[in-house]
Image (cartoon, rainbow, N blue to C red; front, side):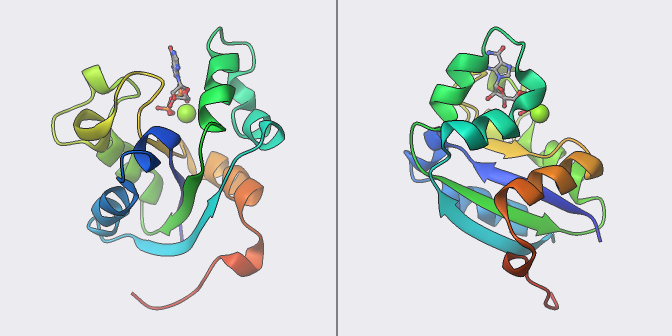
Length: 141
Ligand code: IDP
Ligand code: MG
C-alpha cells in the first residue's frame, strides 16, 4: 500500500498546529502508521532536502527546518501521496487553493507548515531517512 512522509514543520509546531494537521490528514481516510517527534540536525536536513542543494534558499531552508522540533509521520492509503499533496496545497501559501493546509496555516513560501512526499518513490526514500522498519505499524483501520 502506498505511503507518504509528512513533516509538521517548525512554524506549525510553534503555533500548536500539529494535532490540527494530523487530524486533517486522518480525515482523508488515510491510516497513520508512524509518528515521532525529532529535532532535525543539519546532516538529516541536508539529506532530506538534497534535491534543493543548488537552490539559493537552501541555507535558509536548512536553518529553518532545524530551528525547532518537528513531528514526522507516515500515512498509508491508496493514492496517499497525491491525496496529501492536494490537501497541503501549493508550496507558496499565497498561491495555495482555499481550504488547503498551507492556505489556512502557511506563513510564506518557506514557512509553509507541512511537508509531504512528491511521489511514491520519493516517499520510500524519505521514510527510510526518518523511520526504521519496526517504527512503521501495521493495523486495520
Ligand atoms: P514542496 O514542499 O511543496 O514540495 P519544494 O519545491 O520541494 O516544495 O521545496 C521544499 C521546501 O523548500 C518548501 O516546502 C519550502 O519550505 C522551501 N522553499 C521552496 N521554495 C522556496 C523559495 O523560493 N524560497 C524559500 N523557501 C522555499
Ligand atoms: Mg518537495
